[in-house]
Amino acid sequence: MRKIVTILIIVDFFSSCNEGKVKTSMREIDSVLMEQVEGDNTPSIQYILFNKDSIIKRYHHGLGDIQESKKIDAHSTYNAFSVTKTFTALAILQLAEQQKLDIEQPISKYLPDFPYGGEITIRQLLAHSAGIPNPIPLSWIHLTSEHNSFDRNEFFKKIFVKNNKPKSKPNEKYFYSNLGYVLLGQLIEVVSGTTYEAYINEHIIKKLGVETHALGFEIQDTGMHAKGYHKKRSFSNLILGFFIDKAKYMGEPEGNWKPFKNFYVNGSAYGGLIGTPDAFVKYIQELLKPNSVLITDNSKRLLFIESKTSDNKPTGMCLSWFSGELKGNRYFAHAGGGGGYYCEIRIYPDVGMGSVVFFNRTGMSDERFLDKVDKVYFESNSNTLD
Image 1 (tube, rainbow, N blue to C red):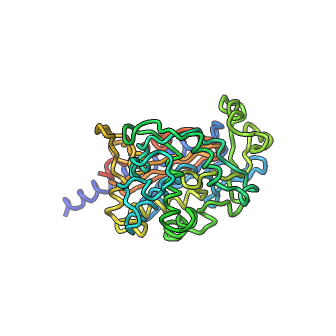
Image 2: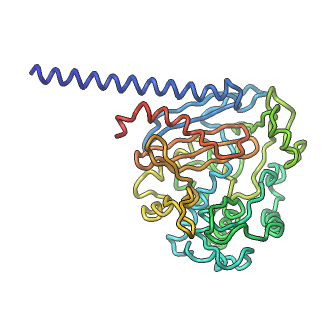
Image 3: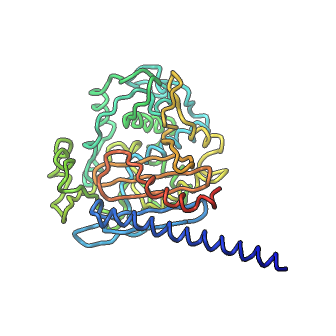
């Protein structure tokens, strides 16, 4: 009997220690995230850590509208930019499952007017190894008031004429390209017989059970949309005027920040999604589940296989997802950044977890910000994850 009591005391002791470590890690996460707002690096931030069934950690802090002193909350929406590419890749694999296309085939088989020759395959476009040019897309936006009259096919027709030569041979090297995903969006429309936006809404967003006001390609409620900001006193603000008409797309300064007026990205398939952090959590949670309603397990494995060049060099890129490792935990991730907003989504398949972070400030590159936050959790919970 004494032995049993002793064992129970020891178990309770270690359980209390682990609980204390978890609480400490959560406070450290709060500190890292709070510093982003209090240090004036962003007007607001939202972070969610989760598994396939539930939320482990949620944090939001700051303002979605500085002028109105309006705080952000779980219903706030953000422009997600290039995170959209993961939806585009998923849609392509769905269509492959339906035998409407073959990713190993040249895309010219489906798009006769494809401007870069007959050798580039759909897989190479998905993996950014096709050698398609990538002109800076900061100016590829239009105001919400211009949306009804905007013709994206006409817009990109001119872009392709100006950028009609490949940067490298197919699968010679990794070369990130937004234009490659414009072409994949066109492929989805040709093969599915509907618009890109309608396909994503019907076959991904609707299956997630997410309402259109929480995830889609238009701002459904301007009162809930976090205003996008750019740091007023920054070098990037000086050069921003070379890419966009600041008088057209931006408002008067609000404190240390210049606000963007509400806008849409010209190319929906590479960067058009707008939504709440929770909507993207549901998306990743569904990808974490076996027998997902979105895609078969075989296709999901294909989605997360790291691509290699023709000389067998790993690229760090799967089919739209970047690969990486944090504290021994393999992950797949994508960032989305542009004028006024920056976000990251991440999936840790081996431990059945994921994370997202959203800012309403400009982001120009893949910052891997989630490394800073997620590592705090993994360091403090290494024993429970083994």
